[in-house]
Amino acid sequence: MSGRIVYASFVDTIDSDATLDVWNLIGTSATHIRLLGWELTSNAVAATLTTLSMGHADDNGTGGTAAAATTNADDKLAGTLGVLITNVGTVGADGGRLMSYQWEQLGSIGHIFTPEMAPISAVSKGFSLQQTTAATWIASGWVCWEEITVT
Image (cartoon, rainbow, N blue to C red):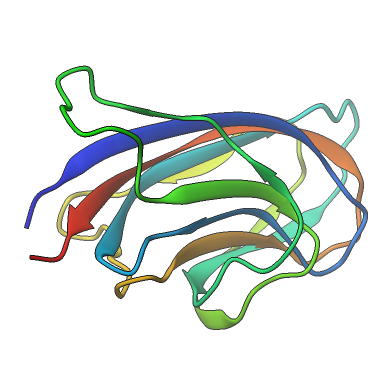
């Protein structure tokens, strides 16, 4: 299985809510998403412990801001099939946690998957990074994924 590589970067104010998606990424009804990596930084100047959980997402919830995505330069297809949304106030259905993090917001946090460990979503599902600590902050980051079209 191989598809096209997509990158999206974002800067967004994350609301003070103990259950919101910092970002979520959902594929279309004919697309699997293979999560390749992500990174997050904060504008914090003092340590503020934040709990984050990354996992499968069954839908994209409501609210938030769509991030602009870019495909590889040699990609002949128009547009992207996955949609990355940041600061999602009402989270979608949780499809199961993959990883959890305790982050002080001083420095970056992220994960780059090796090819054999990269999680792949079911069709029309995806992934999310959920904040489980109420804190308001400005997030900067990127997410990279592969879109695999079902044939």
